[in-house]
Amino acid sequence: MQGVEIKKHEKVYYVKDFFKTIVICAFFGMFGIHRFYTGYTKIGIFQLLTFGGGLVWWLIDLLAMCFNKYKDRYGNELDEYNVQVAVFVLTALAIILLAVGIMSAPYLMGIE
Image (cartoon, rainbow, N blue to C red; front, side, top):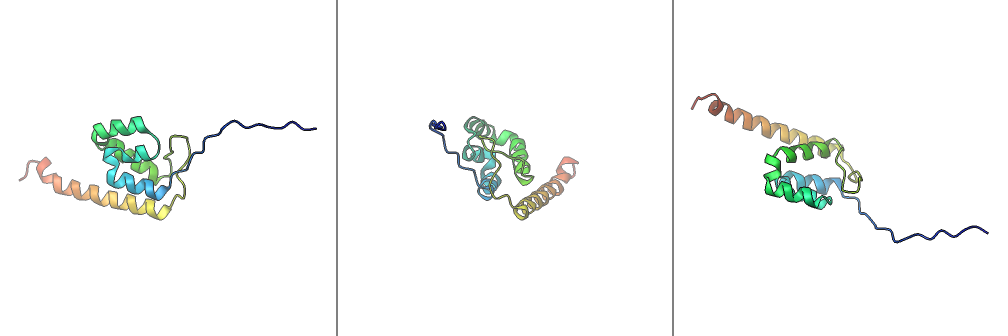
């Protein structure tokens, strides 16, 4: 007779969707909303209070998502990673950073 395995109560963890997470991060990441969504409450509060760590932490999170390196609180990768969405976000980010750099160059060089 084989032994019967009795399982204790197991928590069910829902894997977070890549598209939802990257959209939340792109638009509300400076407030840490994507961290709340993926289960990182303490880090989310910190990002909320520091405006995404001076936007640096927000940028790092966005890049990690684009390269499929971002994990939720339980160590799960985001579900349904989409390369086309990641490339679109990276391209849009590069264009925005380039535009900001070009527009701010005269002020940084002292030319008004």
